[in-house]
Length: 243
Image (cartoon, rainbow, N blue to C red):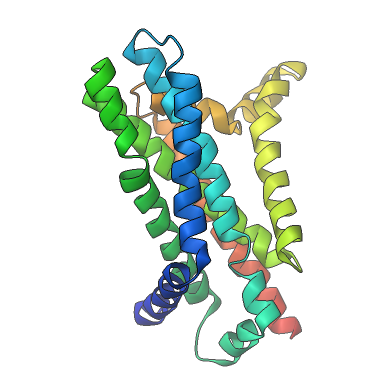
């Protein structure tokens, strides 16, 4: 693993992101959706900071999912469609370095959204509802973990798809499956119910918005991130050997 090579890919992605319409689309669109969701849901008779905090971070959950799926759906497939992926394959760059460089880019944008785009709204929570700082901090950590997890899923979908729409469909299907798994867990026996409920994204995220840093939630998002990054590397390796 050559970190300089991964950093080169990371810089290329950052330059491309801020040098095209994608930066304005993702960052500006996220800010607009945050404002829209929070204004509609949060300023409608919310009398206490608990309700306001939960609704605010559920809004952030929705927008970070949208932003990271859009950001990741072309991460691999566009390289292949432009012919640059074959160039990377023939260069002294490993699949691990490609994936790490692109993931570092996704994590950076996720951090920018979490701190700078979402940051205004926790200040409102603190000023208007006097929400404790630990609620704001735990919710922001949950948003970031969900964001990098979603980006990893999107990279996996992008490595499988032949175009951005197929990549988007694969990513949405994976996320939707994990999203609804917990809702149907009661239909199964105890062991299966426990497994399905553990795969439920929302049940892990909602604890963060309540001021808790659940170990199971942290492990779920981090292990899921590493799993989908590993699967992405394996898909790239298979394509490299197949030519």
